[in-house]
Amino acid sequence: MADEKKNGAGGGNLLEIRDLSLTLGGNQILADVNMDVGHGHIHALIGPNGAGKTTLIRSIMGGMPHKGTIRFLFSDNGRIGYVPQLLEFDHSVPISVFDFLFLMLRKSPLFLSRRRPMRRKIQKILAATESGHLIDRGVGCLSGGEFRRVLLAQALVPKPELLLLDEPASNVDEVGARHFEQMLIQLKQEHGHSILMVSHDMQTIRRIADRVTAINRTVTYDGPIDGLDLTKPFFNVSPEMA
Image (cartoon, rainbow, N blue to C red; front, side, top):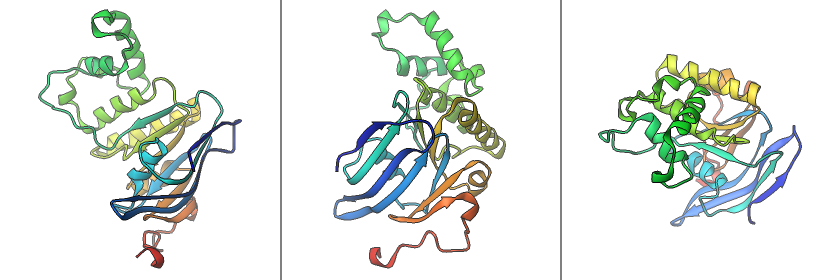
């Protein structure tokens, strides 16, 4: 069934996934996935490597052929922001954070763009993730945490209703990870963003997630974070899928 979009009111679900299955090259990547993401929630998606988490995120974005239904119940602009797990680029290219965002955000041809107004706009964008001081830093010189904050800032423009994050704190030290957590909480509480994030960091998930879904090709746990017991085999493949 084709994906559906429908305007919704505040509260309730923002995203509903029903009976989603995906097969690539004869291999079943996802099977009968059912889950909901609530309005204004931080929802964690967990599972072992190769469980299909990134594939599910890409399916939500409309980039993977699948069976089943993905239904959005947006209440405002219906925009989706995305921060990938990896973004490959040549670190030797002498490009600043300003130039990086300038190229990503400009709507007119480069020779028609006005850099001064755009600089003010980019400074404001970076301020949302407390990274305004990085505007003239070379992208190739950024730490993992700094680059993730720049990518998050870019994903917030225009303001999304749903923010998809694939391992947002990967390659980030403990201090940077805790800072990132506080930014996500602020985005939820002060700006009303709904966040679906893939993560392996159970400490982060316990601190900030409202709900968690564990998958290993199919859903093995779905519920409140307080109900997640890691001593149980939530990551095991069901017998019918083995």
